[in-house]
Image (tube, rainbow, N blue to C red; front, side, top):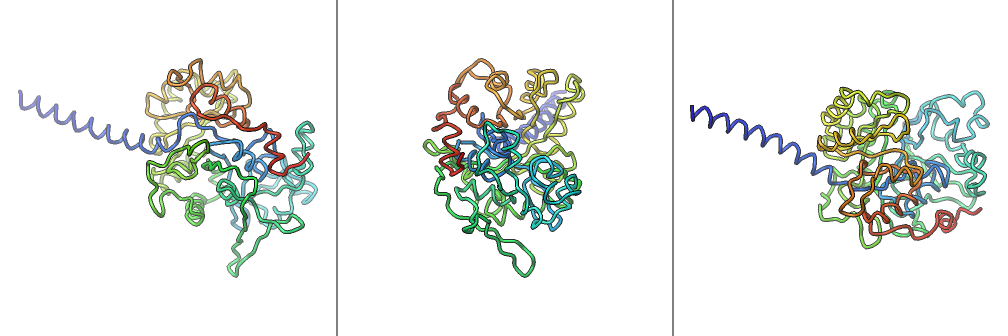
Length: 393
């Protein structure tokens, strides 16, 4: 009887040990992202045209920990930054390519896309925030955002056209130069892979591009765990092990990320509850958490809402109890920040959301500073930052 009891205790201990090892592994990768991270949604959709050079330079200089982008692929296999399935909402595609305004991004070549104006639509829709220098902004390629995070900007000729060359294999090579307005912040990059099913092999292409650019945390010299998220009063996430996160709404895409990146980089499964009350169903939330863990992801990204809240206190508690974390999207107001952070400050804080995907990096940086979970706030107004970057009224 004693021998059986000892054997049972040994098996239990071994099982517990395996379980603890798995949790420890998840927490190790999870710790690559700072708590209360400020994630600049599309750079900004409020102060500048979304997903443009202006939006990302602004987000960097405002002090975002991460800059969030949406990546798709052109007809000639160039990775480009675009949120929607088509160019209709954010560009002048209807004028440049009449009859093709509803066509998907993948139906256009990169040279066709370079003809589009990605800034004027913002000016027309937001006259109170319009700036003449937004007109004519380019649709960006994948590499652009990483170089902006490094303190660079797109290199242009005297007419303002970007300088690009193409080799004999048809591969484009883009040029960059030091940004004279760079203030030293070094954010990480928060990559959303769009429409995975439409772009076979895009995860492998992203892996290779990250390696080519020197941004793949799984290649090259291993980054020390001692590299801080902040260096003095400057963001330094872009130089840490957590400099890249991949996310997607697609379940196939999540499994592809696991297959390609091997559960060794930050990953987030995106879910939305904006139109239904399905999160009230415990079976649904349990399945979401189980799938996220199966994919080796550390985060669940879910939407804020009034009537259909994607991160209720009950769901947040369940996410945290499972050893995962939650990032909320998309923040626009201080009231929303207060709702998902709660009443505490500093070490007494117990936020529902572990990070905020925000359209207002300026507000979120200052909110976290006021709540004493961030040492520094912003250094200038959003308008002053844009002017310093050369975007004139």
